[in-house]
Image (cartoon, rainbow, N blue to C red):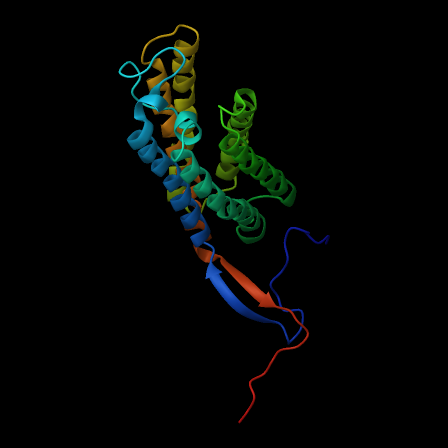
Amino acid sequence: MKEDPLYISSEPIDSSSKSIAAISAKYVPYIHTILAYSAFLIALFIGCVTHYEKIVQNEYYGYPQEYIPSVSATTGDRYPARAYFQILIALTSGPRFLLVYLWYVYTTKTIRTSTTSFGKGLLIVGLIRTISCGGWTYITSTDDHDLHDLAMGLYLVCTLPWQLGVLSTSSRQLPHLLKWRRLLVTAFFGTTPFMIYYFIQHKVHHVPGAYSMYAIFEWSLILYDVGFDAISMMDFQSLDLVIIDKSPFICKKEIV
């Protein structure tokens, strides 16, 4: 059998190998969820406190016609909200990359609901999606509107195969998790047409308040998106992240 280069067995190479540290893999999605929600909610709070009228202002209307800031305006337009958001998203990236890889290992090696080739394809989609998130996070609409929108579009495009791929490889032995994933996928993609509708009302028809309605649906997508990946904390309860010392020698305690 051909060895999978993305998976290294934890079985000891020889008698000198030993496990020196271990932590439950469930903490990876825990940390990811806390940091991701904190990034958006803290930015929203600070943005509203410091520059509320400026971040609800758009090219056609301002307060009181517009009253809810968009995600882009909240996280990218003004200091200090932008700084808090970017720092927290940077901290989120580590758990995010690890979560994507753990899903590959979990579905191809543990519950075996995915073939290796499908798992690698989903892994690539997850990595592209994570990197594109960095694109619209660190290239704000003020810096480069087209590039920001391109990264955001790529992120949304990758969300469809990512969520459907995770849904299709979820364990059928955990029906309550499958139910929640289906609910959040339905909510995410069921909300998207309404968001697009109000964006068109704002951009094409210049309807007062339409951008605020768009922003409400945009913020709801954040809740559904992060919540979808948070469910994996239940899947990963049976997994541990282990550090194994494979050095050819082990220091032994001296006997006094």
